[in-house]
Length: 57
Image (cartoon, rainbow, N blue to C red; front, side, top):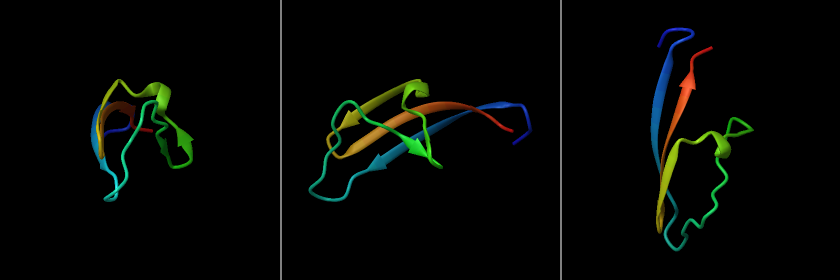
């Protein structure tokens, strides 16, 4: 990764058995809330799939 370049992160978070995700979802990474910056996401009962654009610092 190069400093100043933009990249897209695709993620899938799967809940433990017996748990499910509900809308709205709050995504916190390294103590910073990113929910409002997520480009798009889907909820599939026990999975939260999203993509997020980042700029390398």
